Structure formats: C-alpha cells, structure tokens
Picture (cartoon, rainbow, N blue to C red):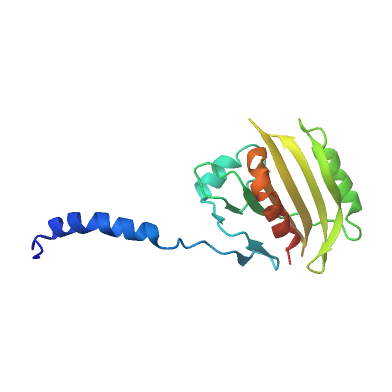
Length: 184
C-alpha cells in the first residue's frame, strides 16, 4: 500500500486512528502539590485536579464587598464551584489568645442567611494557632459549605477559606478539610 504524498490526505487518513489510540491510553491525572501561600511562610497541599484561578475570574467571583483574595485554587471552570482562597491582610491580630478575634468573627457571620455551624474553635497546625470555623450559609442559588482559617503572619493576618456548593460537597468536602488540616 502506498500513502498519498499530500500531507492533508495523510492527516485525514491517520487522524481517526490516532484519536482511537489516544482514547485507549491512560489519562494523566493531576497530582496534589504543596504550595507556599504567596507572601507568607505557610504552605498548603493543593488537592489533585485543582488549578490556579485566573485573576479575572477571581475579580468576578469575589466581587461582592471587600478585597478579593490574592490567590485561589479551584476545580476548573467554567463554574469554579470548589475553591481554596488565600488573603493576606495588612492588619495585625492582637497579641495573646485568638479567642477574642474568634468571637468577633463568629458574631460577624452568624446573621448570614442560612447560617449553620459545623464546628468552631481554635486549633494548632503547623506550630501556630488558627481560628477554625466550619459552617454553611445560603449562596446566591445554593447552600455553600465554608471552612475558614485565620492566623497571624508577622504583622499581618492570613485568611484561608475553602468552600464548596452543596452539590459538590459530597465529592470535595473531605478533600477541602484535609487540605485545611494540612496547613503548615
């Protein structure tokens, strides 16, 4: 059998074969990766399959009040339903116990529509104390699970949030909590 010398004909003949072959090959799955949160000494293992959210999506998704996070890792678009976000704020937390700050944070979120506690307290992870709040609130069109951690980072405040829609929680809830519990 002689192949037609024209490249466009050869491509059209071999393309279905190559596509069928590619379908049989194992798919490469993205692995979890430990990243240092920009501007901090803290690291977190980003779950497998999560990608860095583009800045324009961060600006759009986090447009309701306040400053958007500096970095977000998420399940890929178009909906970006499951997120881990980082914000480093130029505000120092008071010295000593984080309990008064925790109480203030709790008061600020308990009036949110659909609010329901999962747990709240102060935990020690990576040799530092973190305010650890886990709760549900009503999102624009679905309940949202939130896992919030707050700690000191020098003279600044580091805020790490993980969240998922109710629909995605069954698949990603443990993954998000594992990532948050792995903060170092």
